Length: 373
Image (tube, rainbow, N blue to C red; front, side, top):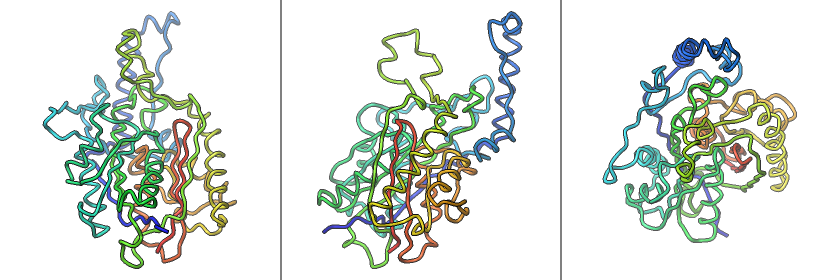
């Protein structure tokens, strides 16, 4: 039987950063301008005054301290509060393609492979720059990979869903190796004028190479013991941007065309679902929580991850057991759990077991149990 192995990972980190103080300064300037401009309407009770934000609030609520972004200047401009990313011509590589190529090349180098060893590319992320042609096929072309490629979107769970698709392709013999790449430009769909969410996201791109065990070196990488996916419909995390927006001009500029969520409901409903999914997945593999050496969880909220780990393990998890990268990267959607894996995997010993788990809009949950070879 063909077994699938994670043999390499890669990461692209945008060079520009915004810390909480810088983000709050821009937001609070916007709040002052808004309240001043709408003083009369606020006094008449027709509009609610906006409240300022604070770095202390952000860090306490989320654990986030800073984030990497494709463009900083537009975001911290209180008159704009959106990244400035110029549109490129059709004969130029897309921004997501550029990010993906960097991450993929690092994953290939780490695995000791070349593009000739790869048969497929899956771009799995929460937002794509265009409907078609597929960004994955553009990445495939830029890298010079033969075979096939396709895009998939399961919001923050995209990377783990992509991993299952890659495992299936490797194990059924349709590909020797598959690159799963997640180019996330989350700053592009974030409403930086919304106090409840303006701090949540950052930009990054990850790549994972999944290949046949027989084509790897002894002791290289992580054996994939099993994957499990779960979805249940909810409107509590939503983005209504789409190609039909132009069919109703009245809704084009509404806030729901960007990321919106009912944060407290998400926390309350998703946390137990994730813990239950991980526990059931372990049980199906004849494993128990005590077998877990590490949990690479979706990096959305520190408090949420601590609760999930506590439910799974039956006790508080140490930072070594459930590493955190969202203090530096914020929520990078599907890339988050893979960044944690990329940065916190090399110290594990042969036989150590861990779980990569991402979760988010849908609701969707993806669990991938791995063992160090």
